[in-house]
Image 1 (cartoon, rainbow, N blue to C red):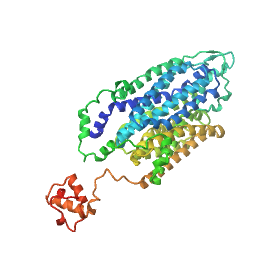
Image 2: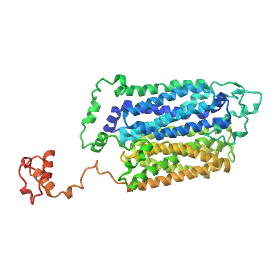
Image 3: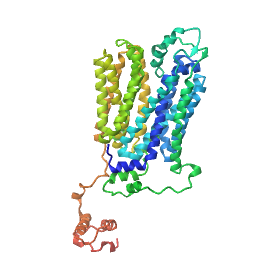
Length: 547
C-alpha cells in the first residue's frame, strides 16, 4: 500500500500518540473477552450459583455503557484525555491482579464494574483522539484501532485456556454428573442469561480447586506496558506536573514540511488541523445541552440518530451472535456435537479480527460510505442465506465466517463516515459509541429471552430482522447526508468569480492591467472605498486614500 506523502507525514508526526491509542485499545480487547471462558472458575472461586455469577457480565456491560457516555468529559484537553487513558489502562491491570482475591460474587461484580468504566472511557477517548488527529484521513487509523481490540479479544481466551478446570472445580460428593457437562455449560453462558442451564446442579460448597488465578496475573503483566506507554506520551507532551518545565522540542524535518507545505495542496486539511477543538465532542450529557443545537438544521439531529441506530443494530448483532451461536448449533435441527460447536464463537471472532486487518489497506482505497454499504448488505444477505440453508452445518460455519468479515469494519467505517458528514463539529463519536454499547447489551438480553420462549430457530430470525433494520437505518442516513448543508469552505471558488461586480471587479481590473500588485492590505482598502461609477474613478494608489 502506498500512502500519499501528506498522510504519511501526518502519521510520522503523530506516530507515538497513534501507537499509544492503539495499545490502549488492545487493553480494551484483552478485558472484554476474558470473562466468558473463566466464568465457571470464577463461580467456584466465589462459591456462587450460575444465575448469580452471570450478573457479573451485566455489571461489566452496564458500566461499560456508563463509561462510554461519560468518557467525553475527559476529552476537553489533551491532558485530561491522556490522564484518563493512563488511569483506565492502569485500572485494567489492577483489576486483573485483584480478581483472584475476590471470593465474594458481589465484590467481584464491583471489581468488574470498575473495569467496565475504564473500558468505556478507553472506547470513547481513543476514538475521539484519533478522529481529532486525522479527521478526513481517520478511516484507515480507526480500522487499525479496532483491529487491536480484536487481537486483544482473541489473545485473552488463549491465555486463560490452559488454566481452566477440566472437572468441577468445587470438590463435593454430590452432583458428580455435572463434571462431564462443564465444557457445554462454559460455552453456553452468556451475559445475564443462564438460559436452559438451570437444571444443572453445580455444587456451591466444598474445596475450591482452580488455577485460573495464574491466567489473570499473566494478563495483568501483559497489559502493564500499556499504562507505561501512556505515561511516556504524557511526559513527551510535557503534561506530567514534575517534568513540565522544559521547552517543547523543535519540529523534525517531516513536521516542518507538514507545517510549511503549500496551501493550495491541502488548504482544507490544514484549516481543519489549525481549527480550535470542537465543542461538540464532549460527553453525552454535554452534547444534549440546548446551546449546541442553536441554529442546527433537523438533518444534524437525524445524522446523529441514524448513525447511532445503525451501530445499535450492528454491534448488537455481534453481541447476540457470538453469545448464542453455540446454543443454536447444539439444538435441533442441527444438533452439532458440543466440541465442534465450540469452534463457532472462535471462528466468528477470528474472522472479525481478520476482517479488521484486511480493512486497514482497503479503507485507504475505498470511501467509508462504500464500506458501510457493503457491510450492511452483506450482513443482510448472509442471514438470509443462513435461513435458507438452516439445515446445513457446513453453511453455518461458512455463514459465521462471512458474518464476521462483514461486521468487522462496520463500526470504524461508520464513525469515519458520520464524522465526515458533520465536518467533525457534532457529537458523532460520543453518540455512536454510546449507541453501539447500548445495542450490544440490549439485543443480547432481548434475543436470549426470545430464544428461551420461542426456540432456537428464532435466533436466525432475530438476526435477519436486525440486519434489515440496520440496512433501513443506513438508507435513512444516506438520505439525511444529502439533506445536510454542505460546508462553505475548503473548496476552490470558481462559482464566486462570475458574481464579482463593483469594487471587486475594479480590483481585479487594476491587478490584470498591472497598475499595482494586489496584496491583502490593498484588496481590503478597495473594499472600504465608496462604490465608483467606473474603474477609472479609483485612485492609482488606493492605499494612500483616507477611508
